[in-house]
Image 1 (cartoon, one colour):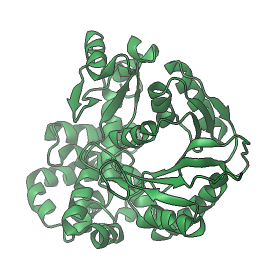
Image 2 (cartoon, rainbow, N blue to C red):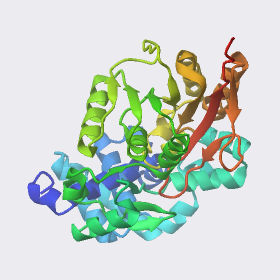
Image 3 (spheres, rainbow, N blue to C red):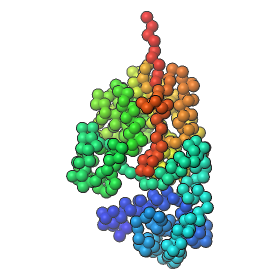
Image 4 (spheres, rainbow, N blue to C red):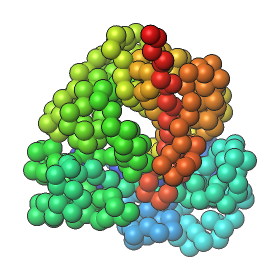
Length: 400
């Protein structure tokens, strides 16, 4: 059944994707439990045993809606499916023990890195910057599954899109003025999607795009455009906008082009880097949504917390500085450079901005509409985090 069309049609594929995401999300906690349950280090066990136990424990963990007997049965069955039925016993015994002693075993996890399923170095770093309470909130938010947030075409608005999707079998919720979909099965097969009535974008990214749109630019350079979400927001908000979008990766550019076509939007797309791009006219607004560690999106991409290393932030900082250096000459006199990341790290955020300003006295930082130096949004359950800094280029005095 796992390979059948029926399995996909009944939502089984979606369930397995969710289970795999949660297995990655709670990897170190699950590994600690596996060691306790089997009496062996995970690397001493067959990879299939570790995988089956991780999936079983995810289904049996607190908050799961899967019946324990079903989780055990399905996990044991995986061993026959992968050709190792002789290992069923260790799966059955381990999960049965967890069923009996799970509360005690979870409570015995000895440190916060295991309890919060994050690397200790990452927790310490956030604690030093944001304080212990916010650090805890960040970790807990990252351990929640992401939501699918929708940006409606402006003529429809939130209420109009919600009504249109309801007529097509998709229920939506509104939170803080933004629309999200609790159950996305079939969403991307709806006429509303095919007709380009919406695209998917987290509220944190929407806030950056809305800030950019509020500047009312006539000419825009989106220097790191793929997959095109912020660009689409701006083109919808400013129908007369003259927009140029850069993306050096052919695959990502293809995706951007397809997204804009579905939404009925047009921009001049250039498959090049910011360093190699030149334009004599300059731009009212240059949007630099730069590559980063993406630690604000761990809820959506849980592998990030296990893949990243402290040294990554400094390397990213160097790349980000080079990007800003290349983009500065493209900003018109009196124009804006909007620097954005989905990182939580000061090395990739404030430090990059301050280094740039120190070397470019013609630029100054402009505060947010709320009077803050930066637009910082920390992750919340179901939402990612982001960072934005708006830099304005001084007007050039005209000579007589």
